Length: 164
Image (cartoon, rainbow, N blue to C red; front, side, top):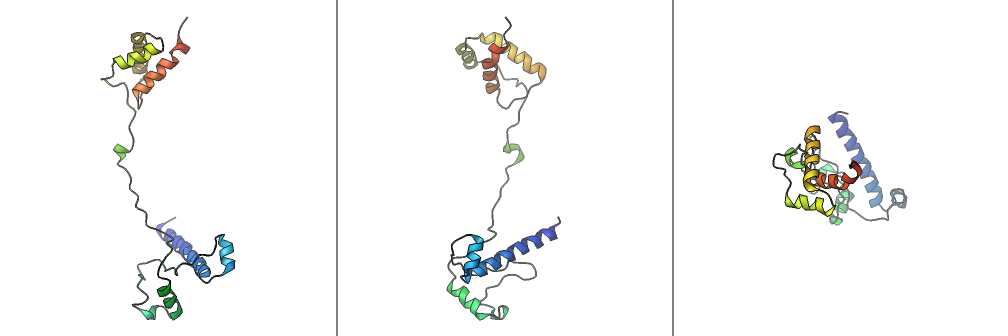
């Protein structure tokens, strides 16, 4: 679907909304039942801006709308308006900061007292398990986001892989 088709589809959807809005603003009970909402009065909707016909203030150019009643109604109901396509600012994070990347065995990863304590709490030999953990993941080229979490998982699963 090209840009022209998208613009045409958006305009068609907008105009369909305008038609429903006009029916609702006249107090038509059929329109309010069809939409499924209680009747709520909004000011008349304006057509979307296009390069060929930019929106102008109706009071500055009365020739634009031959129906003076709609101009009067717009001035009376100028309080609340209904936006069909509100502008939404979307900011995309930089690709580098969007997510952390998994990495292979870091050169600064060593058996620290804290890591050894995790092993001792589970009744395991910390140095032995660390050597198995390091050798296994270096030989496989495993990449993790969080190596401490991988170490804790290794420790919890160690009893399943013990040789008797």
